[in-house]
Image 1 (cartoon, rainbow, N blue to C red):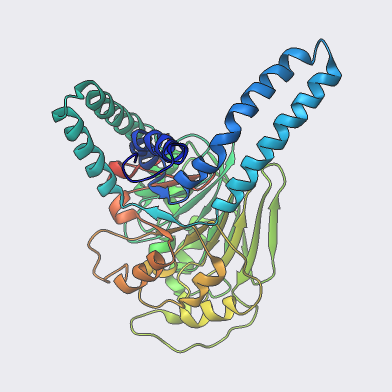
Image 2: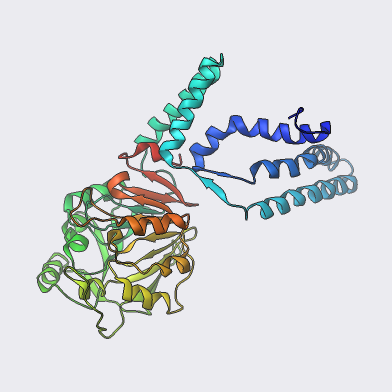
Length: 409
């Protein structure tokens, strides 16, 4: 920097934050998979006030018990500088971040370790490698992680989402097709009570595993779509839900769990049947009867719409009922039949695609995944990552199919 820039104070102002950022970069990428282009400029702007804040804060802490008025003045002065840091932080937050593919992060860290090793920095290389291995081992064996709020179970080609209510209690949205898979997922989450089971519609990949959910668990109430087709699937479900309160729900209904402060608002289906055009394949009418909802917890908001297709997605999008959410459960396993403008209203940070490995439907659609990624939406797929756990604030943990993608401990 000395050869490029003058005067010396400018060189030092840039060199110090750059030198501090470079060694921290591997840790930053491991924790967040992104790097803000404003990091170094922010450090340059706030560096001059760090020393005054430290000195004034230290003196205030010492003098306040002795001469409270002087301590208060010093504290006010320190607070003034601290507010400057907040202003800088708020301004820089608007700048974009560079998002890294998770695999590239680990390749980068590995190459960095090799470079340090062969550049006679063996101890640093060993420490970085050891920390990386410790993180991989620890996070792989501890799923779903602390403070999980939402889990999308790995049930193959199907849907099953679990919303944590605390004390071994949860809302379950759909069951997937395999009773063993959903039962194993709920056992891993230690779920023993399900106050509300939501069956979005009666296709088997959403309701085929009811027996795995009700097994050894208390079910309080079941919500179902107002279209009871296919009739055979509906009748089978009702037999498995004997003795449990079942309710058909429609747009406008809501439910609040006061103890955990979880709220559900139903956005679809309408109370009377609406005909939409049939798309290729089977079941458009049934797909478009899916219960679609926004669910909010203290820390997280979710949109889940079963298998609704573009025309219903458009109706919901233009209804004025949608708002920003943190998490989108992508409808119909990420098929090509999506109303893309819905993404611009929901503005999710995370999109989960519940899909089976090497499925015969071509799910998820590559072009739709590209639309998600173009909007900087973090895409997670159960066929690649296994079960997906989400915790505040939008931190991800997976079960192990892609253990290198684990992002929080």
